Image (cartoon, rainbow over the protein chains, first blue to last red):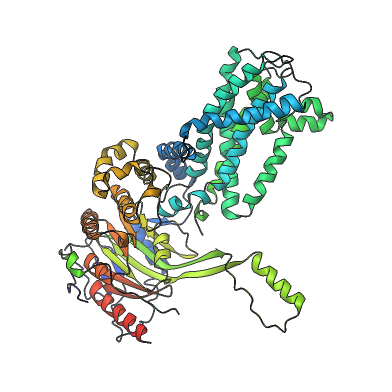
Length: 341
Length: 281
């Protein structure tokens, strides 16, 4: 085993103690102790007192790692990664439909099959939609929109753990991950929304179901979706932190989501089934039910779901801002802990 | 302690016959002060082979504890201090499980310290063996995602795209999903991506082990380029010849502690003697 015997460019060949560099910072060094052949040398202890080390680091303009960055700087660095968030989110949505012969066609086929199942079971076999004029459209819109929430929360929970290879190889603000996981869901939602509107419209031609005409109200669907997107991102921040800190929570999330589904009137009309005024109010104004209401009011033609309900739109805006800001702060407060084993 | 088995099988020193860069060192680029890192390992408990005399109830209780809440904490790094400077390339040697990779991850900000502190210049970039970006996506999209994650803008990534592909030398495979790559091809592409941003501090964790001789020569050039731009390069490798050829200074880490720090030649000699001695034992 031959080795190139040169000690090369290291100017500090003999350097025990301090050594001056051009900028006048004294760089501490461990002394070179050559052990007896085959032995492990004694461990080398601290170089200087912690304060002195910090002083050297600050004089050289270094930044401390593994500590939570200040909020303002954190927001700026997340914003600087917006292209990364978009790219990662859309790439994941694309990769989801890879590995099948039909490929990206599944982006449309998947929600279509989903809609057919609900139409057959709830529209034709079981009538859970008393109090609505067109039960099929009611359920189709409900399930599609609820799926956006459901998928965002689950994906948010997995966003740190599922991207561990990325987290371990590159240092970037971790908040980019929950945000991009919701972007993935939104990218999946876009073709589903088109299917949803078409199926709702077609259901109007079935005997016994009120027509669902296409109106100006549909223009407000994107507004409702954007509000819900903000809310979902906030929820994804919260679940991302929970699961990253306590992995066990990932097992509980599906049960909570199922509970929320029944408490949000996805398959039935809350105002029609829940008679107790207090409970009915709580259920109607909880965030998921609010977004379901807003989306339904833009697509459906239900007299019981008018679009000009200011209280619902206000609730939608308030929940969106509250969860987005609160969730972000909650996530940021644990930034230094993500990516541990 | 497990038997260290480290043989130089990767590189002949002749393959790396270029002169090591000779340059003045700059100001500190990295300060590591009395660093301790402890991490949790899930599901790591001894399966009770305890004595048969124990009572059945007691044994059942112990048994259940192995499966619920089985968490062990591991002290991977125990009090390491050193200062690295601009323009330095530093090798890290040590037996398996001595804490080399954990140390690098802490420097990269991927693992928060339990005690002590790490100060670093710019955005450090870590290149590890298992740093697959997104296996199901093509090399092309991985370049975009990797570049953006490193903080480049989309235009910058597009500008450097051809250079990255050229540098990785994997040709049309760039349009295939990374899952289909051989480990060497993956390493090439990752190295090309990680070094595209010209980081201030680049850490290479055994990632060169899977590359062929031509790729190692290219890596060596890129490392020298980073050092020329006043960057600092860390290299973890089990090949002492690689460390000696590429690094001016070497740290020897043993059981989470820094035991030797000095010119590569001296440290590698001492380490080699240690490995030989423990092989005989």
